[in-house]
Length: 272
Image 1 (cartoon, helix red, strand yellow):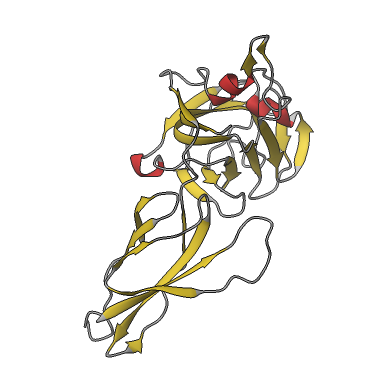
Image 2 (cartoon, helix red, strand yellow):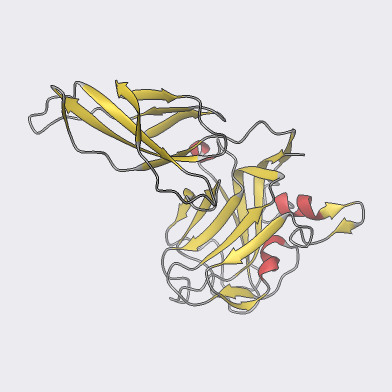
């Protein structure tokens, strides 16, 4: 199942046609949808939103909402099995303004968090201004807010599989990312090798923007930096939650995530 286009109120979805055991194509398809909102906990209810061909345009949806979808084929009115469940999100409402945060061509050039922390008095950590909040799976040592600051230092999670560090923006900012950069912390010198860079609109359902496997861009030095460009098809939507999640051993074979900096680049969506 693939997303062809999204707005604040619509999703345009398509999927591959399927065959039965005799290689006969389905006569038609049924598409079902579930939705929920962060902080609301009723059981999710499936509802049919399409019956027809292998493409559907879903209208009258809620903005900035993640939906779950599944499809199945029909042969002479007999249904086949449901597909894997897929997650797609509508766009947020149109922002009051957009600000380009341009990647400077080198790792850790000033990006989103420098922008959010800069005012008429100079620069401060944007977490202290309420523009960003940093969290992690299980904090072991150091200062979490280094992740969005300009200062180097010590910050790492516990040595547990699947450890993560996340940054949530305030409700006034969403970010459509095309590049991102990371900086090692100063103490443990255990740079990432296997991880995913993820984003979310609600902090519950996460989308992988870029997967790293045996990536040695961050070297075993304090404050080492590296940057990556995202694939074009992952840059089409803004998000307000971002996460680095370990998926395998770091350079020393452990599972700590040790970072003292993240920067994001792309288009900042600003809301009054």
